Image 1 (tube, helix red, strand yellow):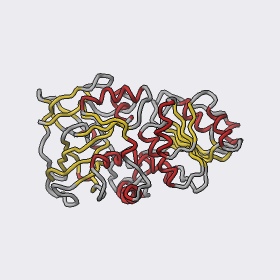
Image 2 (tube, one colour):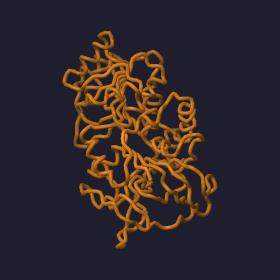
Image 3 (cartoon, helix red, strand yellow):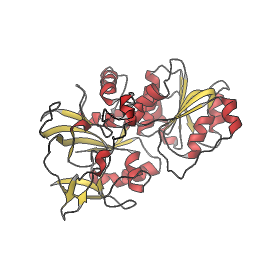
Image 4 (cartoon, helix red, strand yellow):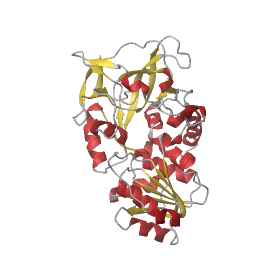
Length: 359
């Protein structure tokens, strides 16, 4: 029996309860969690914006220690520190075959499997594959990556989603070049990672945009050179800060139509907008045909930072160990499992950076 945060059904409150977790079978790994980040995607699962089988144990950004391995698992062993990879690539589908592992057709195949049971025998699924909101979890072997040396596991938890997503949005999707200007919409966990990645890329001006004045100090610590309170005039303010032209690159981390539109309008003619935020299928963003031609801007979706975790984690580890990327500054609250519902409410209200569940 282990303690876990269970989503009984879409739109219902999380239940913090005991679950019965099986021993790892062939090709599986059992992990004792050190920490798990509370990501907006977990909120999107709970409210139905993203659909997975329920009831489910949520949580997909985490790190911990291997407790046991099943038959055939050779790349990790009991006692090893690992980072969870919620979107493992199969290696054989069309997208994996052309190197776009972040779009793997089978990445979320594991969400329909039986993960555990409640004390009364109810079957539970593993949220986004890894069920990190629990003291322990059992995952497929391809969902774990060796944790980088020299980085505490509680910090390394953030590598599993926020950091890979934010860093990848800058370096893989937007491909920010040295000297370019970057504007970041939404300064939560991912937005803080984007700010740090933009600074690492050598951006000349890094503008943070958020609805909360309280986040300015945090944004500047992450690398923002300017801070703008979101409003109807945000694109105009961004142009004033960039010589009247608009930013070279905008990264949208909110997932709302108005914010996506504002990010696009905040870039210069020929500018690039990368959308990281996840919105609902009923939320539409509109453009007219003439403005698409006239402005010559690009608008790009971004899944998991367009990252290959196995390749990107060592690069990120070098930045972290060298002091260029600060994981601990992204965490504004340390909580237990019972603090997750309040962390969801804070995200809805636009408060804070990353809340971290520490076990």
